[in-house]
Image (cartoon, rainbow, N blue to C red; front, side):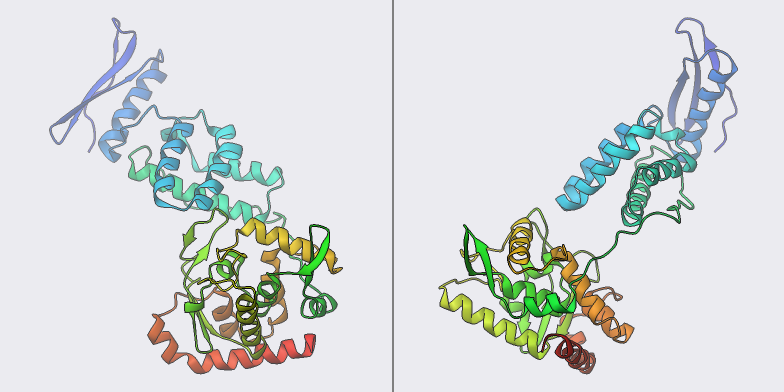
Length: 365
């Protein structure tokens, strides 16, 4: 809908004023800027409302970001909104926080990413920031704060890619032969040693490993359907592909039998496969700290994190057919239901387990 009038200067209020009407609703828009620039601004506000229903014409980026964060805190996990909060606090608001959201251009958003790139953020972080911006602008459109559609925000091609560290063959042999760690100045059995080993053998993310329950293991098949994030929240996994199924290798199955024996021996009752001594799911930070102690005590020099135990698995089995690898690590397209997937792809799972077992046999036996 196009307007047929123009803003007029109101001497009494010392500002430009324009009345417009649409669908029997009348709105008044103003501008305190003197001269033709003010008239154009008032007219633009009226046009934005007539054409796009934009109503928050004075809302600044920082305020729009705050409203978006309020919604995220209700609809997403803490780890997710905390990450986005970091981007707004450290990169978006300092750059364009005082700009009115209706005036933000795609180029200004691109300059935010460019600024973060210059500040040393990795390619992965920049890609996550781009996703944050896209989601936020979509929220602003739905809220009628802007009519902007982002066409093509780019991550600089030379953005640094964080080097992934993995355990070398000698360190893998240590992992599968040494079970002690150093606690309170004394060497003793590490309650989580089977967790470290199982992660290397399966490629589970730390949160998936921590959230694994005995009920998720049916026969020789593991059905992954949850994760516990760094804030202790139970989620459906990192992404839509995280819910997946795989068959255990012989070595992985033996690790679970050993874990079951250890828990029974120590009198630990838990629905979780790798719990604390109290039967509770271990916190991700505690798992990280315990792995670090184990690594240092046993002379594993590569500073691999728990997440990089997953990278170790992927690196070891990277020669697998792509379809098998993606099914194992959770990067494939959305899987089917529990029953259908189990029936239709059982042979593929079994074949993948045999191939993975053969690869590990050559390294750790």
